[in-house]
Length: 109
Image (cartoon, rainbow, N blue to C red; front, side, top):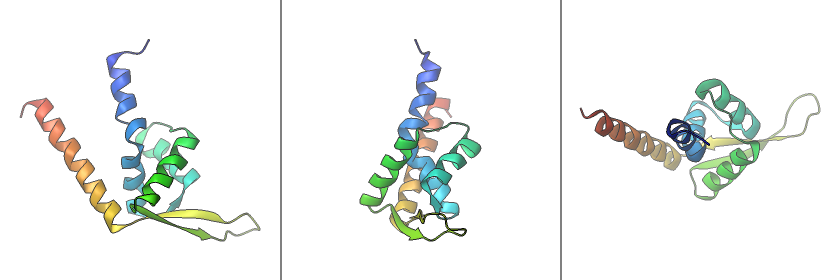
């Protein structure tokens, strides 16, 4: 059985994975596996690999990111790099603003 805090941590990480992905793509274009590793490094949680791909697919379909295949060095297969769009940047700002406003209300300030 999970505690209320564990459920909160799950909801604010894995269930809003799009927010973390957009935040990292604001820095530079990345491929899906790289994003998964960066999330682990920067935000201290590890999303399921399939979840990352599903979220990226939905973000691209809705116009928040674009993708482009890029050749790699050393004969490795090409990688699909994702890039934040202006629409995605706006969504990121709105998501952060919502979280900040919610935190202020919870703090009672």
